[in-house]
Length: 149
Figure 1 (cartoon, helix red, strand yellow):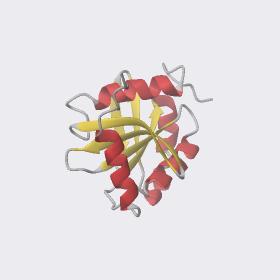
Figure 2 (cartoon, rainbow, N blue to C red; figure 1 turned 90 degrees about the vertical axis):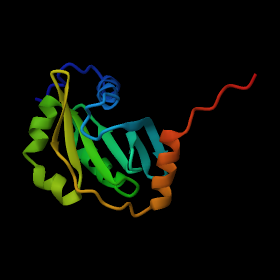
Figure 3 (cartoon, one colour; figure 1 turned 30 degrees about the vertical axis):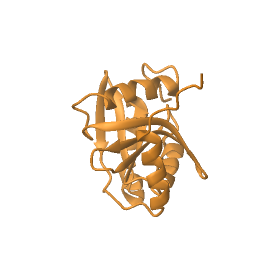
């Protein structure tokens, strides 16, 4: 049985992850970060934009890494890099199937003892839907609307 480590919910995992992404020493460098990017194929848990303008997508799950892998693969239509995010226990199991990640060009990262670990990075690829990539960048880098007076 897979435990969820210290994360009682997927939301808690994502919150911890976003805290790590906002730190200067994260593996991707300075990032603009957004949550729940909706597009016609689904909803991506976390989307980030690098200083170079690349889109990085992350699919979070507590235990169902195969489902997250399929969702992360789907995100490659707009992301230059796509990752699965898991707690440590689930990541240990998923790491045994690295060839599945490599075949889909998806990376794997996890949180262990309050550290962000990248098990493997995917290669950078050009999104097949660049217009959707541009939309993701706009969603992540734009200021939220201010309420009308």
